[in-house]
Structure formats: C-alpha cells, structure tokens
Length: 441
Image 1 (cartoon, rainbow, N blue to C red):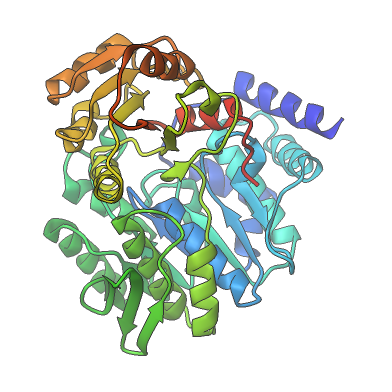
Image 2: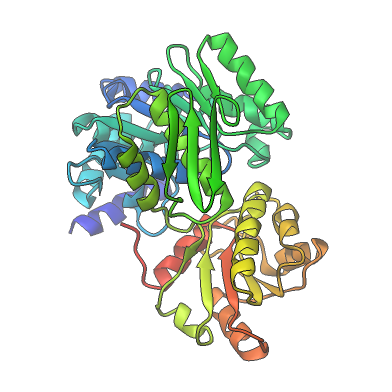
C-alpha cells in the first residue's frame, strides 16, 4: 500500500499545484517557518551548484564520506525512474533511499501545514527533504542545487561547510540570463559569509564573477588549477593542494571531465575540514556511481534489440557543455576500439540542440531523434532532426528509442558492431533505464 500511497500523493500534487519554476524564496521561508525551520536543523552541509557535473560531484562526495565511515544525507534532482532517488538518508552501512512510507509522511506533513497556500511542486518536495533530514541523524548533508543558486529552493540553509561550484556554461537562459556572467552570478548566490568556496576551473568571465562574490562575502575562494590541481597521469588521478599530493585510482565514471569532478569533490571535502584518509578518498573515487552518466547498459529488453555485440550507452547530458564532455568520452572510446557511432537523441524545447550536436561532428555515422515521453516540453523529433542537420550531422526522426535501435540493426551495415549512444535528456534517460529493466538504487 505504501507505493500506492506515494503515487497517489504525487499525482495529487502534480494535479493541484504549480509545476513550473518560480525563482523566489518567500514561499519556502514561510512554510519552513510554520514547520519549525527544519532546514536549520539538518546536518552540516556541502552545497553544490553548477551547470554540468553537479550530480557526479555529489556522487563523489557521498562515496568518499561513506568510505571514511561517515553518514550523509543526499538530495538531488531530478529522479530517473523512482521518485525516491531524490532522497538518500545516511546509514552506517551506506546511504539508503528514503522509503515510500517516509516520503508519504514528509510530503503529507508539508502539504497539510501549507494548507493550500501558494507553493510550487519543487518547493514542496524540497521541504520534504528538509523534514526528513532533520528527523534522521547523520554526520553530513550533500545538497545539490536544483536551478541556479541565488533563488534556488536549497538556498534557504544556514551557511554550509563549503559552497561548491562545478563547471558553468550556458543553460536555462530563460531563468538565469543570456550570458555566462549572468548565469555565474546566479550560481554564485550560494556563496555565503562564514563558509568557504571551492570552484572547478571556469571560463575567465565566470571566474571573475565567482571571485567578486567571494570577496564581498569575505570567504576563502579555492580555485581549480590554482589552489588545487587534478591531472590524469598514466591513467591515474593525481590530486595536489597545499595539504599535499595524492596518487589515486581513476574515477569509476568515464570521461576526462570526471577527473575534474572528482578533484572538485576532494577539494570540497578538504576545504570543509572533514577528516578523511587518502585510502578513503581512493575508495570513494573508484566506487562512486551515478546512473545515466556515460553508463553502458547491460542486457535487457531494450539493449537486446540491438545487433549482436553492439555497445549501448546512456547519458542524460542536454546542453552544449555536456555535448563537449560526452563527445570527448566517445572520441576516447573510439581511440581504444573503433566502432561506427549512432546517436539516439531526445531533448526538451528549453535546450540548445544545435549547440549540443556540434561537438559530435566527424564522430557520428547517423542521428535518430525521438520524443521525450516523460515531459510535455519534449522537442518534436522532426524539428530536432533538422537541428542535427544544421549542426552538420545526418539525421532522421523515429517514433521511439526501440524503433531507432531496430532501424540501426535493420538498415545499416557495419564494419564492426556499432556503438549506440542514447542522450539529450534526463527524462529520456529515465525512460530508457525503465524500459531496459534497470532501477537505480
């Protein structure tokens, strides 16, 4: 019954309150005050904002802390398959997703106290996270920003142990601004007096914005490539800062960008003065998992539609910065084992499809564009295919991911089994995991 109860309350909330973003903190502050300010009673926070790499950096922070014997709550968004994925509660044996019963209780509490007053869906489900995290003891909280930073619903917390800024690039321009400087200013809103700041390497104009905000708040600013360094040497991750050097295994997550994300997490934990050993850092980096980030899919109903020995990969990246990072991973895979590459892409209307496609020029044999069934904001496949063609790729629409895989298998001939990458949207990634029978834990 608990699963049915959770489904019922989510359906009711979806039908009765706003689903859009409204960047204002007044409603959050009011409701949290009426609930006794649970956001001020959660364990000490590592607060993470950025355009790309937030989720991976969150995963590394959690994995390192747990490898060091610490417990931590984690709040992320969106979920891929199950709503529960957004809420992870600290446990001595490793974090556990919040149960259906726990979520129902927290959501009903927030809904009841709100008593029909104006609120958005994301605000209410974030309030539920604060309720859960305040009720359950843990050593730390890892809190991922939902959108922007300055007016994001996570930015009601007290000054965190450390504010973390991952790579910033163009995305969500309608909400955050149409220049890198404007977007950076919104992300920099999580920088608070009484904390410390760790930033991944950034474009010069972004770095200037982050430094100015840190100076105004009079907080230490630890910048990647200057105050801390991460390099890939002989396949290993080498991290160095004023505290010393660590020779570590490579990140479990694929891609050159994951070395930077892992380094950012290490710098954050060290800046927060959390005691962790080098061996715990090594274990965390090598074991961190984050679904739909260059994830190779195993056998399942969807993958089984592909030709024998085909590789099927999944990534939820959806903006130009993510396109660059994903294309680099594909180029590295191609250098190791050459295979014809096909993209299956679904995107939302709020994203920049041409900017996403451009990094794949010269790498891709053909693109199939598909609808994003899990969102009403999905871009029509025919329109998306035209964007791919404008970026210099050949493309055609398909009615679904499964049809696209079947078309690749039926209509194309290969010199080697193909490499198929499904990408462009986390909503699409969630549908793919579900269709292939894979449930994130």
